[in-house]
Image (cartoon, rainbow, N blue to C red; front, side, top):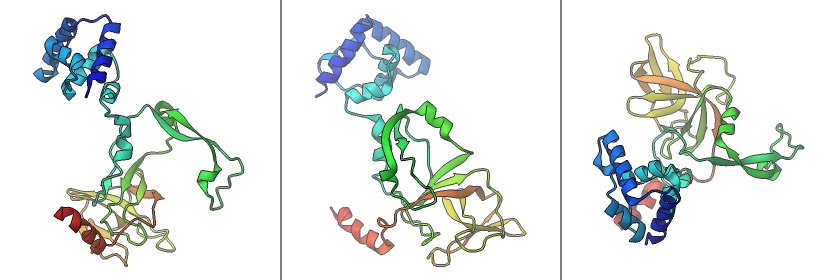
Length: 270
């Protein structure tokens, strides 16, 4: 099944002028450096990888990438494992708990709008897709320059109704990490009241907050939420990571808890 991948690895090795023994020797040094013999590739095994379609382990793929001075992902792609697709596939699993986003899997480029209709008026509600005139691949080193301020990103769990209906389960949030001070007043309505991203020892919360005089952090859900308030010692048991300043929220994909349970039962039975 992996004959073609093996042939490509052989072509890559031969273009570099390396013999099977050369690769074996180099992989032995890599294994010694990491104190792990899984990185070692005997010349007989490499021959089988190249000619018989034997599947290399992740350790040996690493060694081949290092020895051939090529991208690890390119070797994985020879075996139809395209690591650039992780960000798309990560949306498949429905994560029930609110959590902080980890690093986005590394890719060389992102597809972003490169030309927007100059008539776009940000003051008016607009179909943004129609205002984008051209999409293009942007190298990530240039995307770094687009950041403004210190932000982290969070996902409201599909079963987290803490701020329902103000924040729907499944919402994507931008959090300003410089705004960690919990304010007690200054808003005119619930829509202006700051929402904070809080980390405890066991989980994350996106909620309104209060800090009592005795340094207790009160996680206060929306009045229509079925979730009860929580109280933590601050900052020993709970830390305010920042204030929610941006939001992407779908209105048509969440399900009530009883509906989700009913949907899950047939799958579990099978």
